[in-house]
Image 1: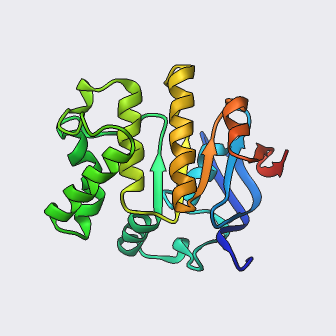
Image 2: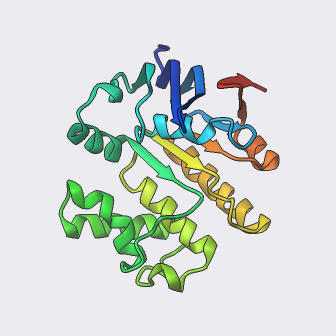
Image 3: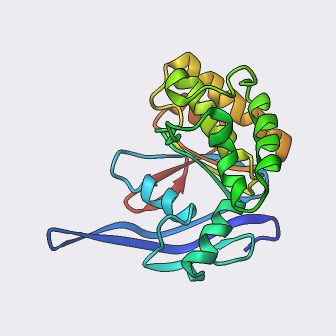
Length: 226
């Protein structure tokens, strides 16, 4: 593991059984993300991108191999410790924003903080984060009252409000028109640069992938630089 590496994956393997047949999705993935690095992960549908992202996000455990995030191995943690570690160190933005419909924008953003901080402090930090993503005028609106781009900005604010070490995004512009997608990418890059945030972006969009700098491709269960 390099001295400035935030995340290191060593020989990560993952298989699933479907109707009695074993499918080897990850066949020995090796990858290192350095502090402040921004990279894109591309590949065909079904190539294992989402599985790899879920393992990096600690939402799934690998069958074998080693994962280190800031020197700790989350795959070895009990679930109770792992959930707190994930909440503190990892921000995740999915293609579908997964906002809670009954809560306002500011409440949705504050929720991750409320696990460890007071409601007052959580809401204050959520307000500042929504201001940063340009939604100071929409804080009291519920998701159904927001546009698709606004909903995704709330999701980004929620992912960033805990000040994570690692930001992972799975097709965050997939449901947006091209212009809105460009705005979201510009916002992510701006915040990542401000915070020296290590960022990985899964996308099929080659134009957006190129914006991130380093591009890697998932193919036949491993990753390759392109």
